[in-house]
Length: 212
Image (cartoon, rainbow, N blue to C red; front, side):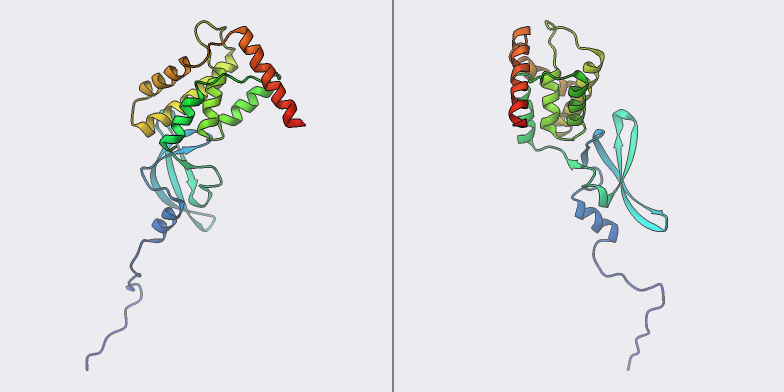
């Protein structure tokens, strides 16, 4: 009778299937080389999935590269959802965002500091439509008064976030993406002093209704 020797310690075979880290990654819906949107920084790419030991605990981490900013960020897999990490927008969402640019700017009659906080919150929300609203509201054509320094900063931040995501989804250059955004903005109603006053009144009225 043939005797089967028991397996030696350390030579046990692991059950077939994905290793633990691969299973953890699959649960998040993201994988290495995916382009993603991190709310506070915009579009980045998952360049690696690493495992590190911190205070005796093993952590799986997404390593996200933001090439334009020359920055890398590590996000624990379990926190990917809570920090707002998401996949690139679907084409229908991009279309809604581009259509938003053609709408009338909506400017509330409130102190600039308060409006600036609202714009910044929209930019860092990671919501593509919200970012498009900031671009629309802060856009100024050559015929309009120049923006203040702080307005310009917020406008360029929102424009950059929007352009990078469009470029990643449509696989075009940043310059082509910016051109598309500009084309959409030029299709919107021309801003004059009268229309700006009307938009402010409308925004103020909406605020009163919301408070009621």
